[in-house]
Length: 258
Ligand SMILES: Nc1ncnc2c1ncn2[C@@H]1O[C@H](COP(=O)(O)OP(=O)(O)OP(=O)(O)O)[C@@H](O)[C@H]1O
Image (cartoon, rainbow, N blue to C red; front, top):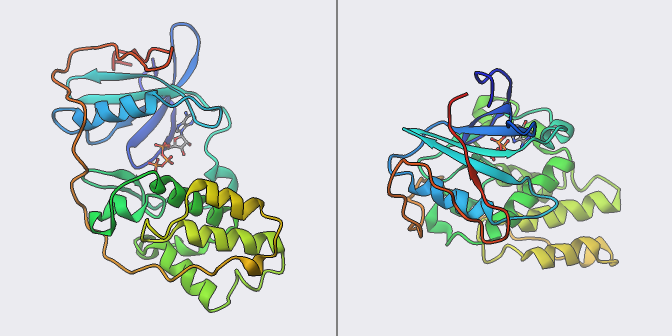
């Protein structure tokens, strides 16, 4: 499928991604999980969740693969690659946590420390806020070196915002609005973080930037790895299984061998 993992597309918090092709000729991206957990429960939960999402803006999960200890997710191949290629010069802040995975700074704080709050849809609002920051080209200064990359990005941004540096000196109305909205999205406390519809309202609103409330300073906390919430789906064996999607597309299962 990947011709011996010949073409590496990139690497994220989950592991490496390789280009592949199905027998039908369809191009795919195979994400090999770097540290799959024994039982495979988390993996199957992820497959069940991602497989249910069908949206024009979300890359489709074509199938998954389980063989021995190997776990892989098979996605549609996106020929234009990752958005970060266009909006950032850096991708060195990848971190794999014991349970939650992702790129630090992009994953919501509650995914890192459960003491902050329950994991909810607000975690995606946080990631959206980080994307807005990237679009404002603010992140590249922050992740310039290994030491900085471990610092929680929102604190840095808020500091700059508060001191009126960089963000506020930008005279462009839209840039200022994006900055404010982004700072609301990345609020450490998920309760203070707006819903996505509120985010849209703020972005699309005709009003002046000044009418938007300035977000409170995020609460500083040390990233602590906690256990993820209980799994809702049991995975009993390593054997192949066809997982029926709740919509009409079945998720297919592939053999991990290349
Ligand atoms: N479906 C795809 N089609 C083409 N390239 C892909 C695809 N999925 C991933 N890639 C490439 O692999 C890289 C790593 O992707 P991956 O989804 O593992 O991590 P990420 O989204 O960058 O970070 P995170 O681990 O936080 O989700 C991407 O930056 C991209 O270059």
